[in-house]
Amino acid sequence: MQKEILEVHKLIKFKNIDKAYAEAKKLHKSNNKNQDIVKVLAYLHIQKSNFDSAISVLNDYYKENPEEKDFDYFVNMGIALKSLEEFENSLAMYDKASKINPESPLCYTAPSEIYLKLRKFEKAVQLINVALEKIEKSTDINFLHFPNAIKLKTEINVALEKDEE
Image 1 (cartoon, rainbow, N blue to C red):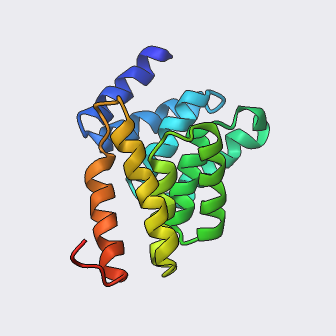
Image 2: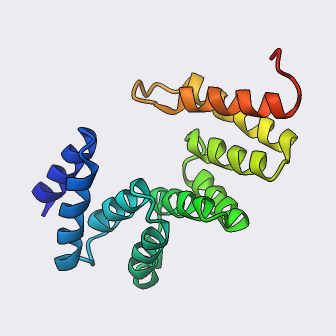
């Protein structure tokens, strides 16, 4: 099973989302009790903007395995709920994710984006600044968060009429 999951990860890495999605769906049909497959399929549902499906897949698995809820679960739920504009529930998911991995910039960038949408600009700028600090301190050279964080900070500064910053 791990070999098949690794193949799906490879497809994702090379941006072949449609093929990865088809393979993950096949794997999930016969292995819906496998947490790794559930995580990958939920991620791919999110990539394809199937947010309700991502929530459904996650809820189906974790309803029976609540003790296995981890960082990935909370982040994927947070992303899906944010996309469905269920902002309070999404913020609650990111709060739980940040308790598991407080160094992840995602725990701050996504909530910052929500607060921007809610026009709570001061909270948005506070969180994006924390995210940028986490990115700067990170030793993970694969962080793709920086360009998105800078873009978000720019949007927040424009909303605060601080264009010069």
